[in-house]
Length: 172
Ligand code: NI
Image 1 (cartoon, protein in one colour):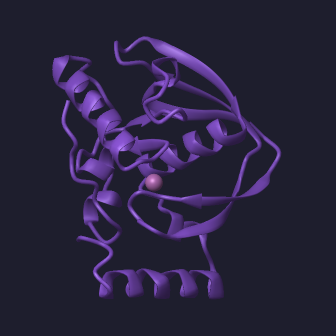
Image 2: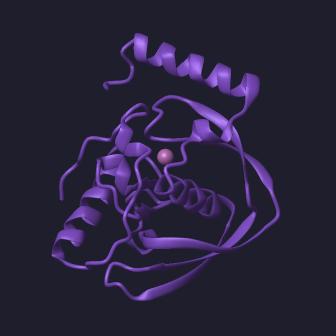
Image 3: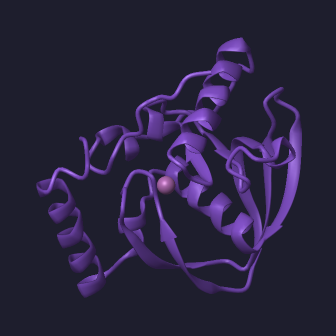
């Protein structure tokens, strides 16, 4: 397993089109292992493949951040099937290090996806898990935190981004 560099906002790969995962081979297993390792080290609750420069519809989620292997979730080609309720939640992203904003998210959702072996799976989630899954699926659609914001809220967020870049807190 190795830690890969996490791309920060501004890198075009974060907003590029992500191709479906079609080949479930050893190379994919290595990528997934690296994504977990990278997420744990960051630390973060999840990571999407485009964040490590791989434009595939693939994400990892681990709310335990490496403490409990039963909580490791691999989502290949995830799709939201159903959502219910809305909740405004504070959210950060490893591609916007140090920044947080509030985003409207579904309270509960059902998704379909494929696991690391390509087998279909269906998952019901609520709370933090639902939020994390939504966040990662957004990445696979090239949708970043900033794309949820409008008007003055967006302007202020982008000002904070510019400040982070200037102070060199962001490495890229
Ligand atoms: Ni993110």
